[in-house]
Image (cartoon, rainbow, N blue to C red; front, side, top):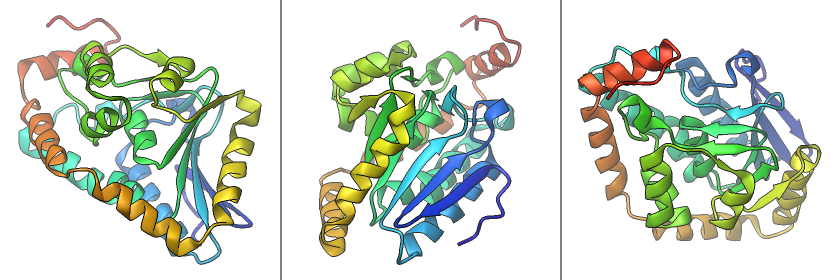
Length: 257
């Protein structure tokens, strides 16, 4: 299994592979290089016979993933926005969602924007009790573009999903637990241990049955919505509101819509 990554850390302990996003100074924000590394690390883990499950987390105590690296796409037009959403959904978020082995998100802090979308693509989510989650894309003149409108609705229902997406507000871990966004809330010191305990239990079950169960559950979800999200997401690139939202973010001020 490859280990010479720059933006992530990969550790295999017995039957569990732990992938940690390692951009702590950037609050583990997702840039293109990090997403590329995640793709390869996840594919490697899924191909490794000894690996029965994967834990996805972030380094440090502040952030799981505090969002996408906005500076990378701040000048994109609609075509580039569509390519961004389609490519990254395909090679990272959908790979996680459709993985034949369980992938648990251990949310150790902020999970915002693309970070929450990354956690939602996982099969199970466990949050540290100080974690904050949200989809703030509307403040940038965008909508979630990595499956967020679809997976959040599937997890928490239309009403909660629309409130979270339309306000762009963060919710705390206990609120996330109460609406079904996360499965467990634990102290940070217990986070990885809880994920390991759950994966160890799953590892005692039939591997073929686990894979079949994941496929069957995923089959209940329609894919049409993802295409709609990609189109709506990309159409917002190049608009004046998008330009103002991103500029305000980069200038650390409130946008004037």
